[in-house]
Amino acid sequence: MKNNGLKPLAVYVHIPFCEQKCRYCDFLSAKASDEVKLQYLLSLMHEINQTDGSKYIVKSIFIGGGTPSCVPAYFITKIMETLEKRFMIAVDAEISMEMNPGTVCKTSLIEYKKAGINRVSLGLQSTFDDELGKLGRIHDYKIFLNTYGIVRSVGFKNVNIDLMSSLPGQTVDRMQTSLERVTALEPEHISVYSLIVEDGTPFARMAEEGRLNLPDEDTEIEIDKLTRSFLAEKGYRRYEISNYALEDYECRHNLVYWNRGDYLGFGLGAASLIGSTRFSNTRDLKKYIGARGMSEMNIQRLTDKDAMEEFMFLGLRKVDGISENDFEKCFGKNIMDVYGDILNKQVKEGMMHHEGDRWALTEKGLDVSNVLMAEYLF
Image (cartoon, rainbow, N blue to C red; front, side):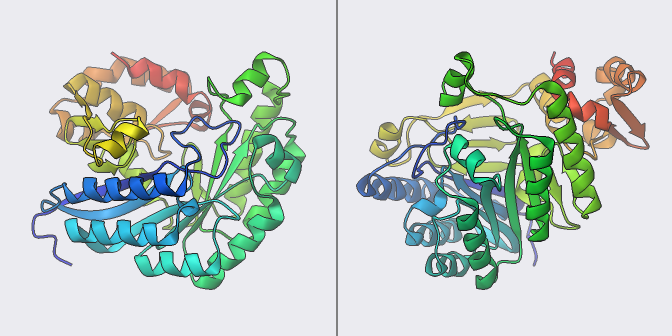
């Protein structure tokens, strides 16, 4: 397919609704009535329709939330039809949709597939029902297995499963059992996110009251080591701090974020990056619906320093790290003139390695990446 000079673009669509808010979640999502969901869809379609997509070819689409599968399936069809009218979508585009176990059926999955969805991301989090209950999930492991079976029976050949680690009361043995059960299903991609207790969530209040019972630091380290080694043995390459994939199944959409490619976000609170400009929609649902998706945006013009910082702390999330040549192409400067002292220091500390054109965090460095990334801030 010829691009005819069109710029590659990723598109994110936010569905801010869910059946029940999980206890750890600080995402922009909530329960809503059917009428609110419908008004949101109309506003979302209007926002997309007001966008000039003539300069771009869309390489990936990600429909996330919230729980996109908790709205009627025809919403997804309408969203995809609207995107197809405004943008040229590559024949081989990766088109992902997040789903929660128990919120889909065979009929809805068939409709998603017809709409163009070709990658499914299932939020499992744990294979133990008591852990799922503590998290506030609406499903149990049996429901997940049923959902996964239907997803495969409908013909989806690119499936991600989300797991969480360092959960309240979680042990190394339990994490191993969850990993064994998930890899036995042979998904193409596995994401393993370490629990972060976010301010304002029920978990934050429980932690303050001493009721959360999180694993100690040694257990957390052992769980992380086990996750890396176990998934590697099963053929899943770690390509980003929290993401593992079989060969050629890395999430192309997320790689756009980490590589600072251009992307447009549609929907409540959705963020975009085009060139050196970041912008995002209002996080107020009433304002978004009232303005038919065209509410005032928050706009940030990035300086070269801002962009360099992002290049480093996003790019170094990838196990393959960053390229010196890419840095010079982006900013017209040698990376050593800007960050040489920090890079050399981290190499000496065993946190960074340098080979050819690339700089990447070591496994030891990835374990404390948040601390190391802060060193790249001007």
